[in-house]
Length: 265
Image 1 (spheres, one colour):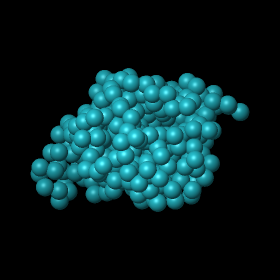
Image 2 (cartoon, helix red, strand yellow):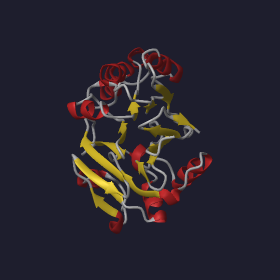
Image 3 (cartoon, rainbow, N blue to C red):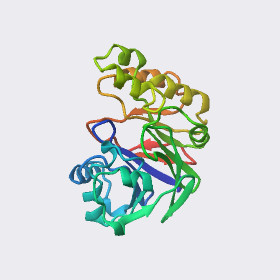
């Protein structure tokens, strides 16, 4: 039995709200708070997670599906919020000043036993960031809302024992959708979202042999299909378990361990 362990779950993933949990036995962080405080509490309780372990919230960017539950959640639990100045300025709310913590690129922040590393990503937002949460040599990446994989993303992906990775749209489904041309260009134009194929290329080219879990995240409701993308990745996953994070419900909790094969409970 391994003693070095991280527990991860998606509480919601999609354009209707994003929130991801990463923690060890005593401490945890949330990446984004794009669903209501009540829904966050309910979904965590559904899978045996406790808000009492959450020590901070990290915000990736200012789009509403990543922040709409933030003010209530942070205020209720007095949670520090790590957020860049550009992202904060882009938010249309007044977050309690005593809860705001500065966030910068290529910064590693100690949250009790966890270390959260931030780096810039390519997305159409003010100062969008991705994160890696680490504990005792175990690394979990949260890589969503990405227009293109940048060298920093590739560098961090190669070190992850598990990752939340965006697979937003299928190229053919997007091209045939009823979306207006400008929106299709926004999604696929290099500063929007990551397609299934681009995400798959990243996965197959740079996946480390020790990656136990891949959670496919931020799927489009209209331009993707969970069964399609799961089959696409599973066919090339080797020993990595592929999970599709839902836009309607929480996932199970997955146990990520450096020393033994991970499992869910």
